[in-house]
Image (cartoon, rainbow, N blue to C red; front, side, top):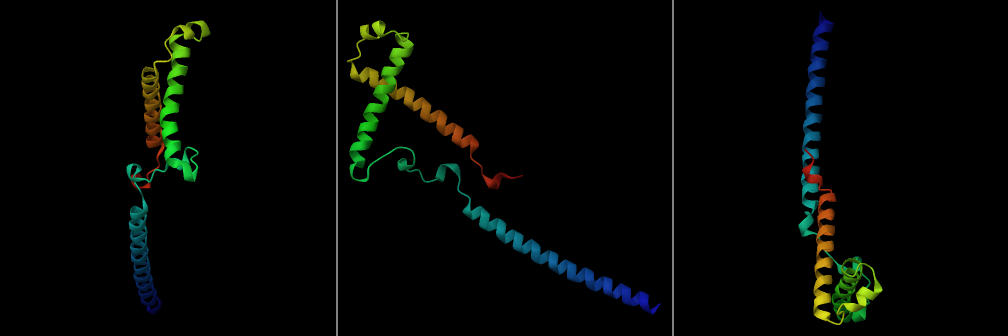
Length: 134
């Protein structure tokens, strides 16, 4: 009978110790989760730097951005006119008034804008936000 009382006491002590360990573990895991939530950055608040995506010389940044802003849409518009409107025929392409710079640029601008919006949508859909783990 004496052993059974000691066993009961030992079990109670073990359960008390186990509960204390579990409380500490819960507290530490809650602190870790709070730190993770603070570190997580939403998709919209991320820092965007054009240098990650296009080549820009340090001392010529302003000029490089202007050239990219003018040439990329113009080239995209000219390619669109050649492939879609002229049917990839050089003779038909030469019949178009390709010297109407604003029109060609605006067509290319719309194409580049659509491509960028689709790219941003794809990046948003593939963004891994660790907060949303249910």
